[in-house]
Image (tube, rainbow, N blue to C red; front, side, top):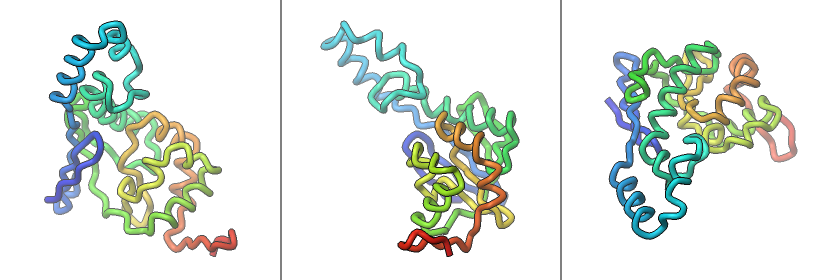
Length: 185
């Protein structure tokens, strides 16, 4: 068993049984502190912190602190179920976003810069629009010799996968090398 902590979620990995369990981080105390701040010091802007869409909220918003990770978990499950995109590491089950069960994959050990340059090429530079997800190798794994994405709860990520996911899955080359001369070796 291994535990990995992300910005919004905690993943408990069970390689022996080939599953990963994702649990949302709910920042209750930060939310209470923020709620007190806005009710005591900034009442005129209070309603704004409830009305913005969750997806676009910074960490300092009430809805984001309480619901963003649940939203991401649910979207991973729904997006995988809806699209069946081969790039996605399968999410088998979601308990309304409070708990996800995903297929475990061997963590990606591809050099981060080489991974990003290849993803940039395979997405016609769209990977640049979502550096958090496409720029970090921890968001990928290898399954049956193929690259798979394990973190795809973001709206931006899903848009890029919808457009380029099949191409990435079919064309990703684990032996890819990017030279400083702009050539692919």
